[in-house]
Image 1 (cartoon, one colour):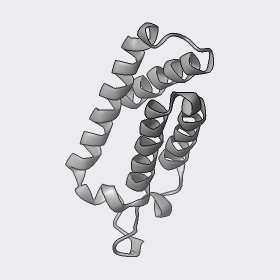
Image 2 (spheres, one colour):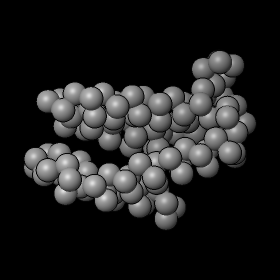
Image 3 (cartoon, helix red, strand yellow):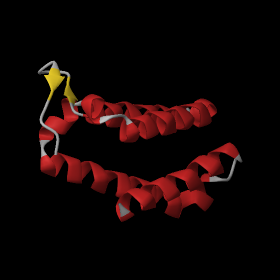
Amino acid sequence: MALRTVHIVSMAIVLGGVAWSVPEERMGHAVLLTVASGALLLAIDLWKSCVYLYQGAGVAAIVKLALVGLGWHLPQARLAFYLAATVVGSVGSHMNGSWRHYSFLDRKVLKQD
């Protein structure tokens, strides 16, 4: 829970910085903390089971990463992509268990932790 909180707070700082046109060099620590905490969260989920990648929550995480990547490479649309990534991340983290654990490969809900 602490790691997820660090990720949310650092991501909020980055999103706010993008919204208010803060120079990238001033957001360096927040960006680094967001990337590091996000990578650790993903690593934990994958350590539990790589099935995560094709379940609802994992697919949401992949979509979120794609949106962040698009925002990074398209600075003129960065805010829109980062906002979309925030929405996808929030929904992915809070959707009910049957959606979070739905396997797109097995076409059924897999056993939940």
